[in-house]
Image (cartoon, rainbow over all chains, first blue to last red; front, side, top):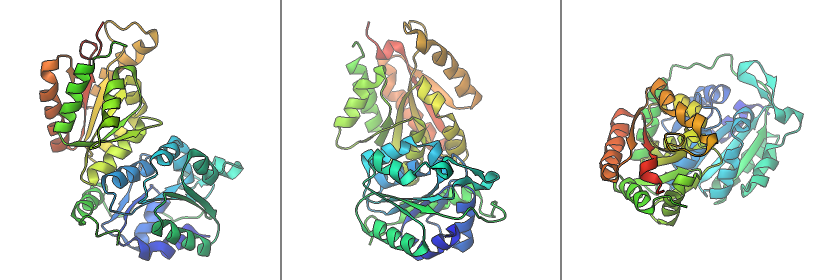
Length: 194
Length: 170
């Protein structure tokens, strides 16, 4: 499965969610499908996207929060899985696109390519729902079910190590940040999760 | 252990007066009462971390979603958070209220605290993070109010160094 096809498959469901992505290919691909004011691209600080998602989820329990993470980022901040497992906010969906490589910086293999299993690590860390999927159909079904459930989920999607040619877009980092904040603080309580 | 309950309560009350709803923390001897107070308060969400850098992400998410937060850490927690401070809080102009128990200074008896304590202020200065000390109970509420005001107006991290004379009762 290609990551961009997985993103396209669930894109219609991101309408009312606060979405946080990691840097590089994930950010560029989601923007290429169509930027929305409820999308925030964390273009650095590897490992902190799920921590940001947790902060949003705790501050706005009425909102669904989706984090699009990656294997390289998760491996840099594996302790966050224990924090997610401890607080397990019902409104948080944590997707990990696992291409078993650091694609944006030369494609060097990560530890998931040599056997480390992020879904199993998340489950052992206490995340209530975990799954690892390999096809678009399974990914879409698992994402829908995670979004509709009230159990915090870490969903690992095994994807091909392919991405866009370039990662810089014309959306400024601060423009994105203030637009996202304005969206978050203007969405009425209780409305977005309907 | 002779950590000041009264002064911990002063700090905690001042944080609540500033509207702090989320507090992230990793245990440290001087912070034990503050962490317990946060845990016991139904109006505050305490987030216990595996590593302090996670707190940068949590505070950033909380800020963008309209909630005020604070981070409780020790010198080494600050040192362990630097990449997140630079590449999230400073890159994206996010306010952080960092309360750092300032171990390793004059009076420190634990040899393992002495190096990190000595590096904290030079690193804060190198990162151009505005900081001040809390040493006197009489200053606590006012300086926490000032720190929160500056963090929110500048959209940058600020640090309050919790001093031995405030936190420790020999």
